Picture 1 (cartoon, rainbow, N blue to C red):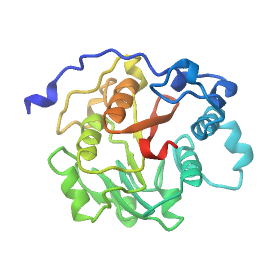
Picture 2: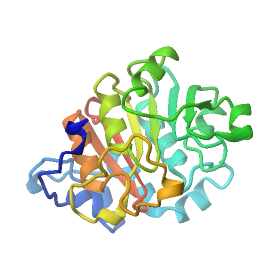
Picture 3: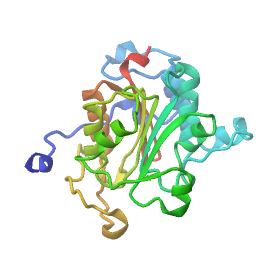
Picture 4: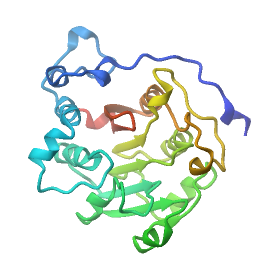
Length: 249
């Protein structure tokens, strides 16, 4: 599929607000694509970003009785977003769900009673018990898997972490689905370039260990913007949270 080997044409500087280091700057956050003179705050996105900036200190204190299952408390940040913006169908899609328990962005919400679709290329025995479907995710099968499982077109949450073709799969999903909130894996090893791994259907990160797998932070931000999403925060160079533009009000 020749179109899948195209080379990115742009080098992006990260939006200044995504790399802000202080709580004060987080709380006077700029919305993307606005002039610097239009800085405003406190904005609800700023509040969320402030929480992310304080991890793990904030959640160790404020949420000491609220268990987290994600790698870096992403589920608690996501829960704060839904606390601000509400939910619609309480449906979460977790692609690259592993066994559905360890380092899970969806377990927190499943324990709240959300409906879910969990998919992984190698869920193992534990994953199967958790209802994780075994599929090797490709451009050819991803949307048919979602359709067969009656996934809402505007699911509340999409989590994508497949250590490889993340950029391509996200692009494919967003052509047919519009999740309200997305948490997607990013790879800080790319630095500030708009770059991503060429599509390789059978890529297996455990075997190949390509340090430049997945997508860069700027590539994920650009892809989100092209599809109507606003970045909320990045978490330790491993995950990026985006929300649909219509929720950024």
